[in-house]
Amino acid sequence: MNDVTIHDIASLVSGDMGETEASLLRDRIAARPEWRAALEEMERLAAFLRAEHGATPSPGALEQAKRSLRLSRPGLVDRVAEGVRTILASLDFDSRLSPAIAGFRGVADVAQVAFSAEPCELDLEIHPGHADSSMLRGQIAAEDSDGWVLGFVRAGGEEPARVEAAADGSFKIELPNGSYTIVLERGDVRVEAGPLNLP
Image (cartoon, rainbow, N blue to C red; front, side):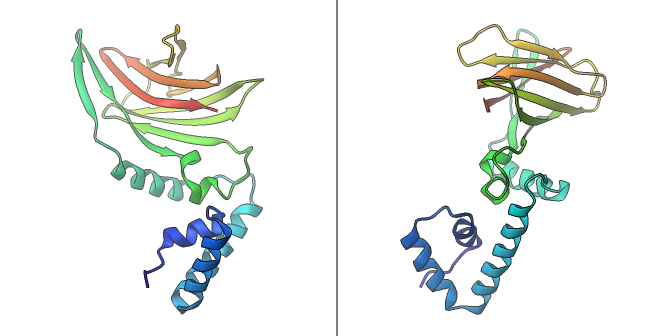
């Protein structure tokens, strides 16, 4: 008999498997006290998270999820083009892709996305906007957060929407829903992050 993993239990609790598969897994879990205990604990946690619709994950939970995703992503790619150093950022975290967090929260909650590259980190909150748009609130964390300009380039190559970050690296912009590449520029440094899909 195959061992039951924590991923199996999480899929069961989040409802990501069919009735037959879930029933078979529950039978297997019933055979081992440690698996039953893990299932009970996960169900208690799920019940708590479902009851806290407005709660965001704790900073510790987000950092742990970011570290786990960072380890599973390819490394940075650095290239030189026309004297501008361009660095491709890696996706560290997207709460919409993390069923252990997103699956237990309300659908109207704010999504959180994080990218990182050598010169800076970019943290985003995606809020529902007007009509078919999304409101982005963001923060650039860098050795010097002043002077960053962000461009949001649509997949079709349209003129990018641009916003200048405040001196503390914060910014806010509303964008039509769609797929974007984010271009962060400061001096001779250019960081590309994406794709970012809205909503």
